[in-house]
Length: 193
Length: 253
Image 1: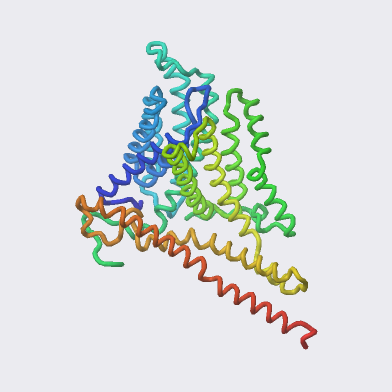
Image 2: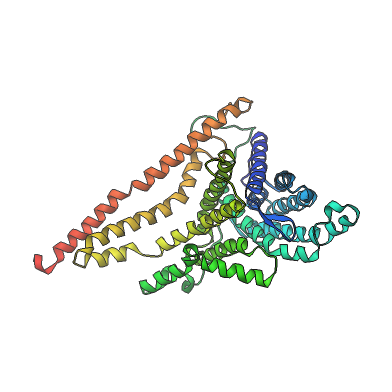
């Protein structure tokens, strides 16, 4: 996979993608009254991070980027978002493995699995875990299975939009880059070496 | 890249005659110019699943429909290329819009519908970009030019100019996604320059903004040069077709 080999560059890119996830999730959020949640466009960068940089980066970008966004305005969703969005990026990265832009099949399967895990994960939290937690901690008593069912469609649409965007940006990022990997150990020298 | 070929009858460019193709394309793009389809979808969704934010969900549903219509004509790889550009443009527009709204509240007064408006802009860009390129590429300019050069009348010159404009738009759509590969030759790691021996220290953090501005300006230059470069050639082609038509005309013999 044409990933960034330089640790410094990889860290910078992960940080940038985490910030972009947080910003896009935070700035454009349309509330879903049934679940007290919201529709957003941040999944694009989670899928992109998983496909481009692997499972670890996918997890960091998904978990921290989205949780930071939830911290402002929707703190009750932080635990669910941290786990669900983290798993979305991690699963995408795990399944995508070392596939390059030569074949689209594996990245598509990876992105779709990541998106589906997000939809299933939120349903699980909103339908079962939060109502269960809500019996002990009233703060979590904000959803029920019926509300979670209503949120399935918005989450699926949000996931599909993220899958397509992540795939498109990943393809643009990695197109024609198999021969251009750069590492810290063997830096290029000279113009057009 | 895997090449999955869609059946020929699904490709919009194969539709004949030209007016049927135009009608189908306008019908596909109708939800982008009218609010009625979005309203119908929203009402339907809200009836189907009460408490669903139908008006919000109608926008992405229309966008997915337009992508699905464009997919057979463009193919997966080309559609993803166009969508990469569309997503970049949409995210940049929406984020900068939201930031400006926060920074300059006097110029961009905020209200509760703002996020919905931003979401509409986001999905409109995502739908319009691939749709307009599919529309432009569905018509063969060479056939149009051949027909126009055979005709006489006051609309002939206007038609030729229109054909030339259409060909240039098609060329821009073909060239710009491919320019990314050219740009990568200079900037292979996307966010790092090729010549970076001395980019290990903290000083690289200071150099990076300068490099990113330079690489973006190079990208814009490449776009401009490669977009305008073929115009004289295309004008010359039209003139040659026009001249050959004149020389073949019976009244000239």
